[in-house]
Every structure is written in C-alpha cells, then in structure tokens.
Length: 105
Image 1: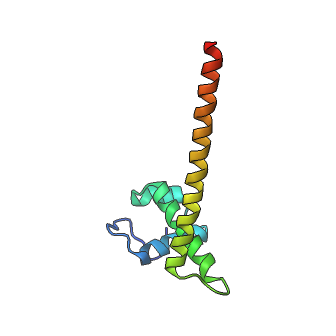
Image 2: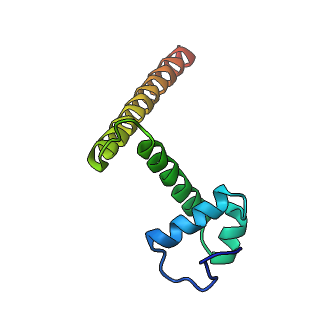
Image 3: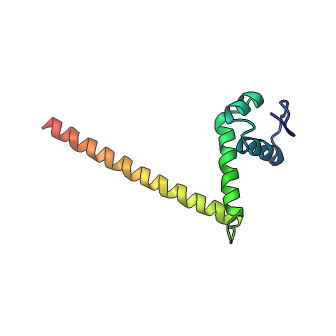
C-alpha cells in the first residue's frame, strides 16, 4: 500500500480511515489486504467503506441532509427492518404451533 498509511497505526482517526477507504476505492488495495496489513477485521473496514459511501452520496445531493437527519433516516430504516423481521418471526411461530396441533390430532 502507498500513501500516508503505515502498518504500525494504533489509532484510526477519521483522516487515516479516509486515506484507507480512498485506496480501496481507487483499487490500490483491497479490504482483505488492508485487513491483513493493519490487523483489522474485514467487517470493520467494510463498515468504513459503507459509511464513506453514505457520506459521499449525501454530500452530492442538491440539498444535503444534516447529520441528525441522516441518523434519523438510518434509524427509521432499521426500525422498519426490525418490525418486518418480528412480524415474520411471529408468523413462523404461529405456523409452527398450528402444524404441531395438526400433527397431534
């Protein structure tokens, strides 16, 4: 890897994370290579890349959302996904109970 990153980084500041994400986006390194080089989990680096993509998308909007709006939208999306997952779980439990009753008869 090139640039301002060095393998002995102990504290990942926003500036260092940005430099690494840019190297990944530019194809100078991969998540797997960075994970090995810096002893970070691939999911942590992928999270930084996803955060960068969200921030980049927002900054390119005609009317960018402020940070609070971004978090509120993300929270709303997560709450909707959680609600859908809970509905599915309840439906599966009811179906299982009905099937067990039928098997018992």
